[in-house]
Amino acid sequence: MRIEKGRFWNRYNKVQQAESTATVNNSLGKLYVILVGDSPDNAKSFIELNQLYDVLIRSRVDVSTISILKGNSNASDSASRLNLERELSQLRKLVSYEDKFLFYIATHGTFLDDGSPGILLPNKETITPLEFTIMASDMPYNYGIFYFGNCLGGEFAEAIGYHNNIGISPVQGASKLVEDSFETAKKKAKRIGAINYIHPDKGDHFANDLFYFLFDKKLSIERAFDRSVEINATILPMPYACPGRITPQLRWQNADPAQLYLN
Image (cartoon, rainbow, N blue to C red):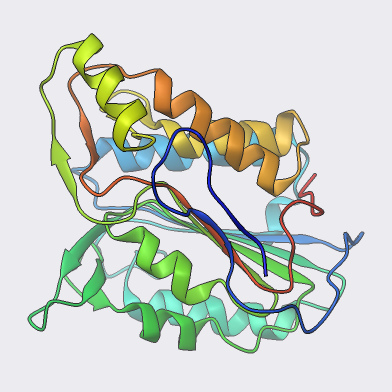
């Protein structure tokens, strides 16, 4: 089992969570994608989806394999629990063992009444890590990458990162707003871990960097993650929301991110 610790964080953040029971290799199959965003009044989330969608199209990902859920309307493409379950169910019927899957969500995280973490969807529905893992279980694809851009996303990355799935999140824990000076924040970032700032005009820096390194630079999943951590630990536009409990997460079992590429 591989557990690694990097120089910009003080917690283990790259973890092979269990001994590998199968070999997952790079494949030539299709890449299926589901992007999930927030409500229309959260411009940041819509910007993120558009930016990431542009990266996919630029990388010649087949548009017919990309699904986008966003907003809190009653439409079939809104980011509701029912629609998310439908998309994952349809995916289970479409993919083959040669295919790959990329899931991205940028809504909010919340603490439920019992103190456990949850994803908060635009219509105020919630999903726990266990519920999401069940929704996305038994997928007959080669491997899947799940990016959770919400607060408490690390808990979801940890829950999903088994078998042939890879869990990624820029934050372990809740977020807070910081108003330190640039130099103070930079020192704090190096001391407590990589900080992912959310710019109101540019969205999630960590996700943008990760997609850039995965698709434009064609780096392995692990190397793209490492580069995103390094950049977001040292480049800190102020003041924006940042993780309160630090440490981006990369979790897996059989699908070794050091050996796998999306593009």
